[in-house]
Length: 268
Ligand code: PEP
Image (cartoon, rainbow, N blue to C red; front, side):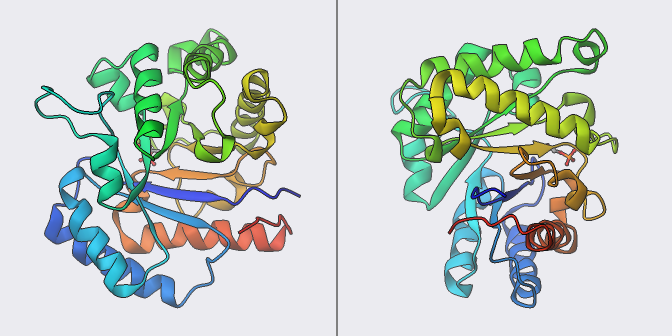
């Protein structure tokens, strides 16, 4: 039994312009009205330019959906052309932000130190950083998964001294599982998340039991329930399946049902 509320976040990546986004969230809202997903914190994570429109739909329709961003600047303000600050996002109603997604690490050269500074900037601006970590296929094959996770999470927690575990979350996303159709097994996802919680204990002490740790990588409605069964997995970060309202609602419903039937009792 856990008192950590599950989070299910849908990362739209570079998909859906603001008009498509409005249709998508409106349809999602209609589907959610017929479902009991109150036990799950549902988050949509659109591209920056959609945020205002999506937030208007959420507000107008009174949807129980939180708004996330895919990235944020490590800087608070200044001469940083093209950047968007945490305070700007918070003012738009964003509450949570992905930090260090593997696609940002790979395509935009985000190293561990930059990820750590970005997580700190998110917190300063009032956002909850969802710090993404995970090993590559090569690292997995040579048995260095635990070492990679220790390096990636250690860099962030070392920078966020004294952070409130309720103001942070972590997503374990093995790179080989992202967008490949091959999810980790529930056992592997569970043991990686348990390892991350142990690592977090070194910095957060008992507070690590409040930290929410998600799994991400090729999740859909068909495998969502089994992936949140391990006790240290507190939700899911979903890419492709979140691009349709039916797909994302399916994942949310599966997680809500799983928590209800296994009597894991999340707090409000
Ligand atoms: C992701 O990008 O965070 C992700 C998990 O993608 P997918 O679900 O498509 O594997």
